[in-house]
Length: 119
Image 1 (cartoon, rainbow, N blue to C red):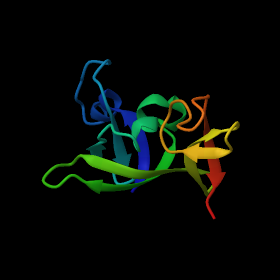
Image 2: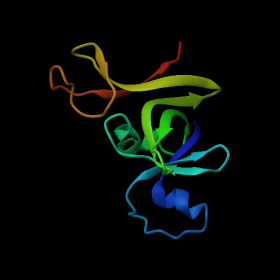
Image 3: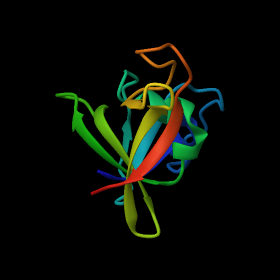
Image 4: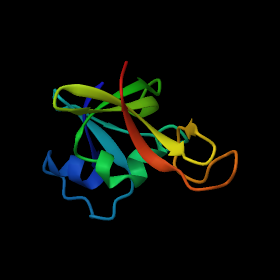
């Protein structure tokens, strides 16, 4: 699914809904204008905490929760200059990646958001 991830209040504003600015959550606004709120869990957490990933073009590998418009994300990619990048977090110390923000699961050290060209 392609589009932009926006804070939920900003996504709703596109439809004339004046939600409080502190309304929690984010949503994917697809290229076709459809809005799907995103479930916050390990693989989607980066979309909630990384402002860099909000409002820019993204591609999400996701499935709808049955009977809802809620998305469960399994992979995040960004798009820049028509090039696609896989998004993850990198630990320089352990030389490994993790899929959610926070300390390294191996050494407990810091991780940084990383975008690598898709192969």
